[in-house]
Length: 250
Length: 332
Image 1: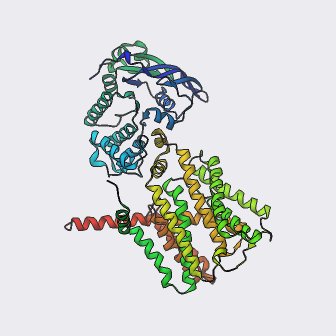
Image 2: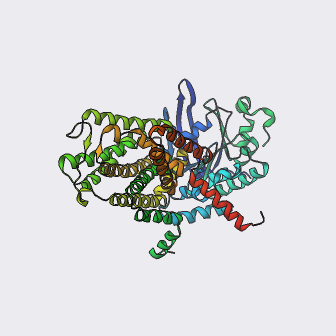
Image 3: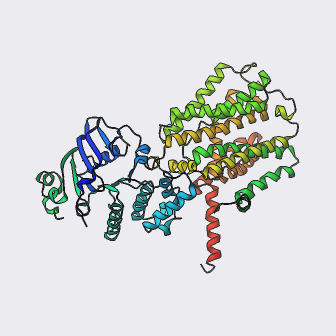
């Protein structure tokens, strides 16, 4: 399932000294990360480690106190979320943020409209994406009626429609059944095969250790380790801070 | 495949909304009594206002209770230009629309970074500030209240027959319905729905939600200000406490909510039902029993909102689905 990371592809995302505080709480302190183009990178850490804060800063929903974020060598630290999306950064949310007032097809259409202003053309593209993810039968349904797995997949379809080159997935499999988890793994591998770089936050260790080529570990707003899943699993600092010895089987 | 104009017209003709509006359009021809024509004028006019409000607050879920600011500004611009400077009300309406856009951009620029109730409260504050400003500024040559001179003629937007006002209000309604329809079928419309659905998600998909809200608020303000200008010429009297009364904003919202928020037919349906109902309670149960009439009207509103939170359009859609289901599966 896991493939080696290709170090010759160059980095798609660079975080330099990224720092953020909320009042007296240091949410992130001097984070430096390089994400290789085309890689599947897992971002792990206990609750409150700063993972979602980091996602919000990469996607532009939160500003930084200090540091720099470069995407495809371009400085994006001061760009708005919609501008970052246009550059190719897509994301999902911890709790799926679906447009419940629109059909499944129209949800995906919003992403597709970014590439073409033509409604008909964009609807066609949205439908193709739904077919690709085996969701075409739900095109006319309203998302409020869908189970959590379909809502999570819909969020990915929607992000996919905006043609991202980097996709941030926030807890893509939490709350899913084993069968649904396997489907999600298939989907993530499919996205990776399309050349999309994936940065994934996940608490389910077995899943994230198996699917990722590279793991970044945060704890109390600091990066405490960054390595291959095997090395991270052996890292004493990570074990002490987060994983626990019995959970370390990959 | 390109859709021809003929095909498009055919599809419009099958639309129940088009039929509904067409039926409303012929009603004035059968209402010779001044009282009924007046009621129809108000139905069309308030359906127009509610529809304009619904663009930003229904589809975009930016709940404004300060729309009376546009209404009042439109009324004052058209009224004062005509009564004090003799400028044609038609020019006044155009200027009202332009000022409505400017005011919407100004209010939107200041308030659209606020979320939910804070935005709503700030729109009320803006409208109240304008009311106070106009009250103390004493706009118009005749002090606080201004009576609009009545010189009959199309150029003066003044008519001796009520039906002329009724049909102008109807045309205004047609225009705002058409524009709303076009918006909902456009990229801006989809982005507006997304913004109303979840603003953060919309931003993450490349939607500049701030710009979308500002643009649609300007369209909404444009129409409301024009309507305010027409209302002033219809009522022939304006004063700040009348045309800047928050009651108007509430009425625009109530008609849309009762009819169906975020639907094109909702505001029309709300006005068609609620204006005759309130007129009935005011005029027929009026006099000593006026408070009872208001009480019953209020109870009816509460019942509709309580049992049909999606409005009457939602109720119609539920009934329609049940009928279709019954026809398809007669055994069930």
